[in-house]
Image 1 (tube, rainbow, N blue to C red):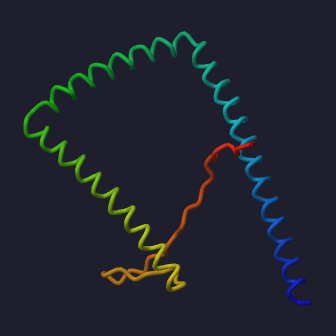
Image 2: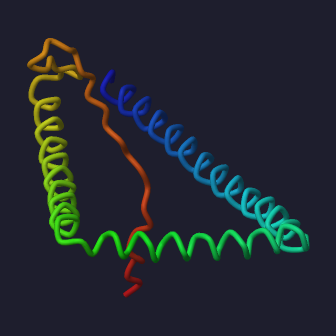
Image 3: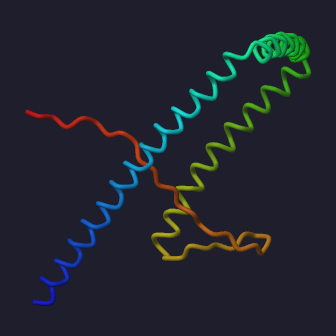
Length: 141
């Protein structure tokens, strides 16, 4: 009989958790909509101000000149090589970080520990990050 009671408690806890998740999804969506409205109001205020528009045009021109200068500098052979190396290093770091993440999840699951000590003696905490993405539509066959 305890098992049925435990199952009922688990089911109830699951439904409560699911309800909380759905409320937060709705709350976040509402906050995003409100943020969008407020941002549009602010952007409209800037867009309707003549002085701001003039300063913005000057700033865009300056950015264009800066970009052109930057592109000319980046064409120097030594800098082309450095830029390629930077891109390669960023790719290596991204790939190594993904592999490390998989190993940390495996470590956490197999040991139950949320901390690991680095070679330098520093204790690091393992943090998992979960997020929601839209799923695929259900087939209604």
